[in-house]
Every structure is written in structure tokens, then in C-alpha cells.
Figure 1 (spheres, protein in one colour):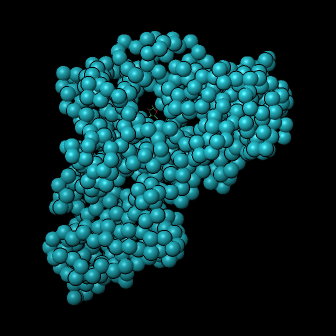
Figure 2 (figure 1 turned 45 degrees about the horizontal axis):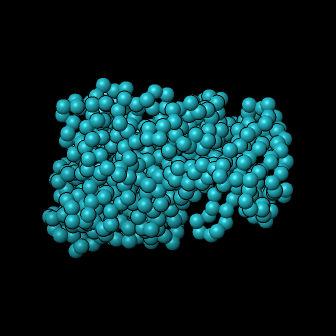
Figure 3 (figure 1 turned 90 degrees about the horizontal axis):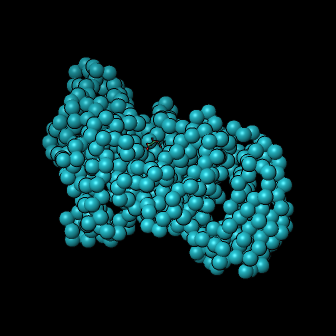
Length: 621
Ligand code: AHR
């Protein structure tokens, strides 16, 4: 492998080449990154109809003691459903309430994870005509372990009006399959609405589950595309993500049923929280907007202007001054300064649809006129044929087998180079199907080859992100995914760890490299990059051996202005005994990068690449 590391040979890689794509799929947000523990907190999951679907809430006590139904008496005008609970027992005669009382409980998202010593904020709205006491408890789902208790005294309630109550629960035990229970032993009618239980210990108090957040931060993503994917489109337009309904006080958000991935979300993780997440990650937000096209229905271009205005309003919400109409709503939510929104994707995978081009152009021209600095992303692939419409960037999605993915190292080799033509955004890529299982080494190696190809073609490729990012194992809608979790555990698939090899690439210098080998299963690239916090700089050589034979490679580096410092030079390898090996909750570290000291670091090195391996040689300069 010959590498020309001279400064004049290098070409700068785009600053935002590698980022992440967050879609509300597989309970990535609701029951995932968003730390809310109550599922269906406003009883709205059945939509605005009554009776509504209160699932996964359940009733404690038989119908002799209690009846529960939904009605439309909530104090929140955008989400009118409330839960009416009529307690029949304790009637002063024969109908005595059972020990422990009657009421309702919520199991969260397949069990709440409650941890000893941690505090949880319970917020709820209650209305009752009678003076009732309510017991609040966190307990294990099997009832054997009490984790926290509190009482709501009748005196705390404003009789016949809605009262908002907030209390803090301190856990005195740990259980990852817990429930929140509200009970009483007093006859009467009680309404509940908007019941939330949030751990106090979230990232910066911003509501993000800390361990999952830190897995994202570990990738050093330069951008975050959100909130979909198909989630943005909806199976039907009426079920698409609507940013306006997802902002403001959480109690007032109606929530919605994502009909592509088939689950309800309370929209606690709304448009504001996505922008906050991007800021917390130091990543540029890429806001994917619905352009009036879903999987099934479409708005005619002649009627699209309200949709366009809706997007302009969303941009003002993110970027407007605090005294602007929508900027003031953002400021009222606690973010006075504008967010740095510079990318808007107009639709998702809609290029072939009848109204796309017409709608796209309306969005494009209106956004460009109001915000000329915003980069606009088209859904149409411009890698082979020139786009027939203006765009700064075009989307490119690829889900395929391992062999095909690996061969796509050359995907953009023949794309026309032009100084002002749109660049590619590979906003979704992954090996899928039997090669991937639920996240295999094979998939990761093929993707590594593809990403090296993107680095080498980064004069025409601007950005790239793996998809999907998250899966809650209790609701796998898509396989594989980068980060796997349940209520209390998480691990990265090999594809997650493979991305760690590319986290220094964005903004680095790519150097020409020539592989003199007969093997078509080896792919390599070389970059130099400098740390931002110190003056350290490195030559990073990445090599994938996709084949089943060991490869001995001689590496010669020319043109390096600095000497190689053997101290601080490392070798990192991602491999495993079996090609289909995966990580799991029991073996989360089975396929992870292993770092060692690079013994022979220098301008001339011999390196042995194990079969099916991905190696990074990091030479300290
Ligand atoms: O990543 C999963 C889905 O794949 C996305 O929602 C969609 O854009 C693509 O078809």
C-alpha cells in the first residue's frame, strides 16, 4: 500500500461527512432515547374518539369495585381525552374495597427501569368531585417489591376543578420491570390526565436517556437527520409527523399514531427536543419535512402552499429572533438563542411520486427566497443522471446484501464532477437481509468498504448516515440497527462500532493511496487529522480485509512532513471468530474494536490483516 501523505497531495473531506439519522422507528424515541417512563400518558392513544384506547394502562380491581372509561373532559383543548375512574367500593355497606385499593397502573414501555437512589418526577392532572386520597407507588410488575410510595391527600385537590400535581419519588430499590400505580380505597369519581414520570437524571436535564445519548455522542456525529424516514411521510398524510403539534408544553401535545411503524407516540420528543438533541451532540440538524406526500395520499401542487408555509414557520421557530412569531414560542420553551438550522430535506423517498417535483419546487423556491443559506435536499438520485430540478444536495439510500455493499466502494466513482452541482447525501445505508442477521460482523465489514469509497469520493459526497439508528428489542420493526436496547441495557452492533473508525474523517485531509495487491477483497484509505482540543495530529490508515485469507501488506508512506512518533501510535481491529458473530445483551463486547500499541510504527511498515477484519493504523505525528 503506497500512501502519499504530503500536504500538497491531500484533499479536504467535507466537514459534515459522517453523522447520524434518527428515525422514530422501533421505539427509538418513545420508550427509547426519550426518557419518559409512562406510555400513553394522556390516554390519547386511540385518537380523539371515545372510548379511546388506554393501552398499556390496566385497571386494578374488578367491575364490582371500579369502572374505568375515557371521556372528552380534559382541560387540554388539543387532547380532550381524559380517564374517568369511578370507584364503587367503600360504599359504607357490604362493598368494601380490596386490600391495596383499586385504580390503574402503567407498565411503561415493556417495564419501567427504576434505580435505587434515583429520583423521579411524577406530574399528573386530577379532578374529583369528592374528597379522595390517592396512593402513588412504583413497584415491581410482579408486585413483590415496593420501590417508592407517596400519597396525594384530598386537601391537595381543588374540588371539581383540574389540579396539576408534581411530586418527586425517591427509589429505594432497583427493578427494570416496574410499574407506576395509582390507587384509592374511597368511593367517588376521579378523572386523570397527562400522567408523566421522568427520571431527574437525564442528559443535562434535557430528557434524553443518558446511556443512549452517550452512545450517540461516542460517534461524534457532525449532523443528525430527523425525524424520519417513512415516519415523516406517514402511510396516510393524516398520520405524518407534524412539528406544530409536537412543540410547547408537553401536556398540550396531542401525540400521534405513526402508521408506518405502527405505534403511538406522545411526541414528548418533539421538534424542539430534536433541535436540542442536535445542539447537545454538537451536530447540525437536518430537518426532514413532509412535502404533502405520504405512502398513500398526496396533496396536489395547486394546494401545497399551506404545507410550504408550515415549513417556513418551522424554520422561523428554529432560527427566528425571540421576538418573531415562532421564534418567541421557541424562546418561551427555554431556548432564547436561535438553533443553527442549515439543512432541510424536502420529503423522504418521494422522488418517483406523482406530485413530488411540483411540490418540491414550491418548497425549494420559497425556502431559498427566505433563507438563502439553507441547503436544500432533494429526494431524487443525481449520482448517475443530472437532476432536472435545482438542489444543493440529493438523497441516496442503499439497503443491500454484503457483497453488493462492499462492491459499492465504487458507487460514486463515475458521478459527474462539477464545481457547483449538487452533492450526494447517503442518508440511509445498511446491509440487510440474511447477511445482516440482527447486526453481524459481515455487514459491518461490507459497510466499512462502502464508507471508504465515500471518503474517496467525498468531492461529490457531502454526508452519510447509517439507518436505522436504534431498536428497542421489544418492538423490532426493522433489522438490523446500530444500537440495541431495552428498558435498562444497551449495546452497539458491529455496524455501530464500524462507524467509530470514521469519526475523525469529517473535515480531515484525504491522501492518495494505491493498493498493489491482487486481492479484490482489500480496500484502504488514508487521512491526516488533528485533534481539536490539543495539537496532536495523526495519519490514519484504514484497511478492510473482506476476504477469508490472511493478507500481508507492506505499507510505504511518502511525503510526511513530520516524523512518526511510535509513542501514541496505535492499531485498532474490528473482527471476530465467526463472520456472522453479533453482540447481545449477554455478550455486548463480542465484536468491538480492540486497540493495541502499534509496535512498528513508521514510514515503512509490514502489517498482517486477519481474515474478515477492519484495521485502523493511527500513526502519531
Ligand atoms: O430506515 C428504515 C426506512 O427505510 C426509512 O424509514 C425509509 O426512509 C427507508 O425506506
